[in-house]
Length: 145
Image (cartoon, rainbow, N blue to C red; front, side, top):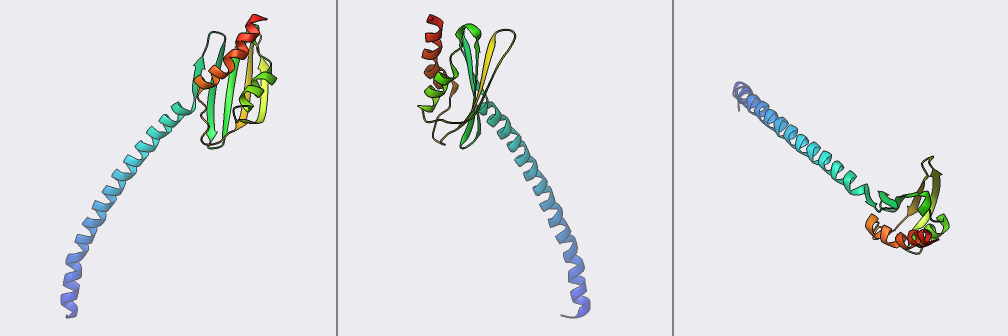
């Protein structure tokens, strides 16, 4: 091919390439927008799945899964139904949870709060309803005394 013919072909090919670049840029923006919306939806879903609480008339149990092997269990109870922390820990550790850290506090209104940080196995289910059922006998025992 001669130089003028090559230049002529290049001049025709450049606009085609520019159109392809514009189409690919538009497609990229659409995909990024879709991914962003999907990630935002997933983040909302994960947050709603991670923070679940179960209410009982005398105490509240909520769980937060921090990652595959750590979780936090929050327990709130009224002073009249306060269970010893040792019994709560024994109950949960018997279920395969390994305590990493614990704290407790009391409000002026007579509520006690236990924040328990556990190491857990991926397969271990930490549903508040199940934990509440396991802890309920401890709280019912306190109500009797």
